Length: 211
Image 1 (tube, rainbow, N blue to C red):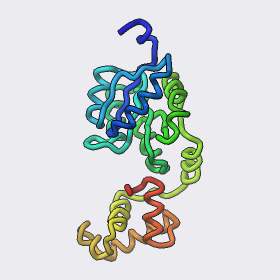
Image 2: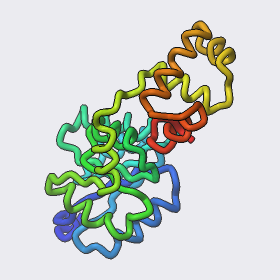
Image 3: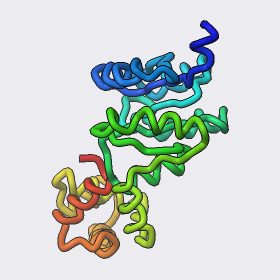
Image 4: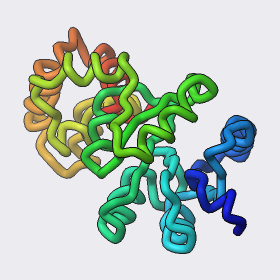
């Protein structure tokens, strides 16, 4: 590696979509102070490549096969506490953003704004700044006082999204049907949802469950 490259900000990208990785590479090739040094297609590769290259900044997708992005962030940060990791995702939900930040991410970028925001976000992460888009920051603030769904409530909301009735949910989760009804009441209250369908819509929008 030449002295010129050594002075650049080194970047690792982890995303399971080759076109997205190619798009990021096409953006960064025009940045004289940033160099893409490695690409991973899943969380496990990201961890291995981080160990091998020790990049200044890592760009991490959340939804990847095998080890997911937030789990990869936790594992990398556990081994390398100073790692600077930016989440790059299509998901705007406040719950996903909060989960990523709790895992140790230093920022959150939306894929539809990469061309505009990516280089400055990388430079900011490299200097220790936190990067959160305004729309996500507003959503985090809006829901900061909300009661979070329990793991069981998330499981039940997922089952509802899959089209299962209360009796089916009870059988799948090995709990009483009355218990399912109680959990659904709590879900509707916490999400300020009108009904089951509305709760699912809110859950998907906020990133509580997958679409």
